[in-house]
Image (cartoon, rainbow, N blue to C red; front, side, top):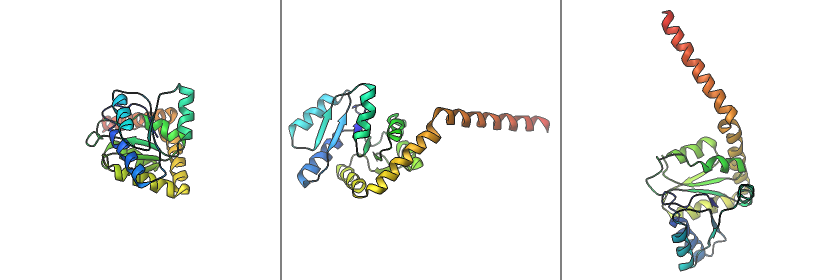
Length: 188
């Protein structure tokens, strides 16, 4: 499931194409695109145009959003090739909190890939490659124990690294180190 914005940066046409590939291969995989955005109508047209296992679902309120994430087997971050250096998708925080494994279709050296690897919360496949996207899904589904471990790692990363209290503590420690270093320089 992709949850969130359906804009150009997300490159979700590659997910629709992965759904077409799944359909033609008879793979038991369903891609769900959940949300709104500037590309939603075009994506719906693509879904309606040819057989695919991709489904588009309208956005829900905040309470239902969490339930929707919990209902997914895998949570997808899909990025258009070449845009991975722009920013870490904010959805990763809610994805990690859900305890579900993350499949990131992104540039291998990009910020999103780095965050997924740091959290040990999922796998990364090349952006813009529907066959790699489908293979990533199949890899995660084939080993449910590993997928559960990745999801648990994401939740732990969210609680220990991304939580507000943890971030404030790291910032406070950084400031303390800087002021200690500055005070030591002035004593010399």
